[in-house]
Length: 390
Figure 1 (cartoon, helix red, strand yellow):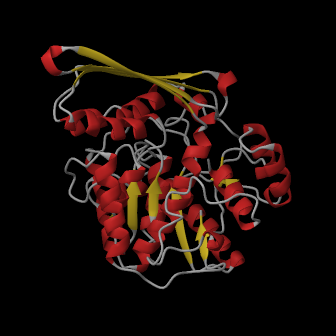
Figure 2 (cartoon, rainbow, N blue to C red):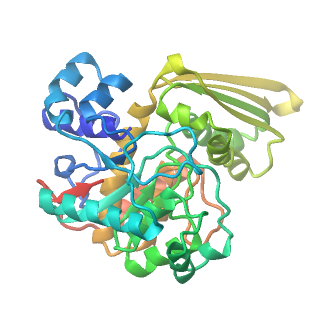
């Protein structure tokens, strides 16, 4: 999705595409940065330049790829922090060689500082688009306070994941951070408190792009029409790198947890037969397919069904949200906000809240809250090359 986001912004700058699919393109007067102000950099376990990555993933059309190939071929990701204990199926060779968690965090800081200096940029936003990691027990004592977390860093605690290291690297410097994955990142008490102290806006987790988006649109309608959901069967097939990562049962458990959490909250009762499945199917590539069978009971106890087959492109749905998160988190930073920005919950399957209460999942209400937040106060719009987005 990161390569698609970068390619998309370059195509937009060149006038090859319009703003279709960018949810906030029509929102004016809030101080959101211009799309042309975004400069990208980031990490990957695979050191292919972005032209090779775009060719491999096959998301862009031939004409789109030809238009941006000269730019993408000059962009190469930096070696990433990795740990196979958290994501077994991703074994690329471009990883940072230093040992020790503190050294890894310092390497992340050095990458950010170098990029910001070389690109002559004013601000940084970090968005985690990495492969899904296995679940982590967020109630462990080392995650309770910033002091406990930093002590755990010093002893190389094996429960600290790469996603947490990137989140810590960001919020410890006051850098806005979004977690577009189901992995545990900034969503432990220690890092949430550190984000609040340092004025780092945070949002997450797990981007709401396809099947779950439709659930959070349909479920409120069924609820408001008093149609009782007796069962909801969901299955997904996808064959890209995200699907390969999720082919590991531990990583898949994280994803299913965020995908399965929305219905009961919206409907106000537990759906006894809510089944969510994810299958890696290599020939599908980035063309994800989602099937839903919904059983409902209506007036006089009469059973009815809805069947949905969503054939979609994973990166095409996700990349615009990554771009909008960069813009909105930067706006939150310039407004002086720190900690969880609840108004950005519409972008996620498992939205974060400031006090840990159950989040709002219904898409119409989430969208209303986002629009209210955007209009609550504006700052000077940013144009030109003033921003870094990583």
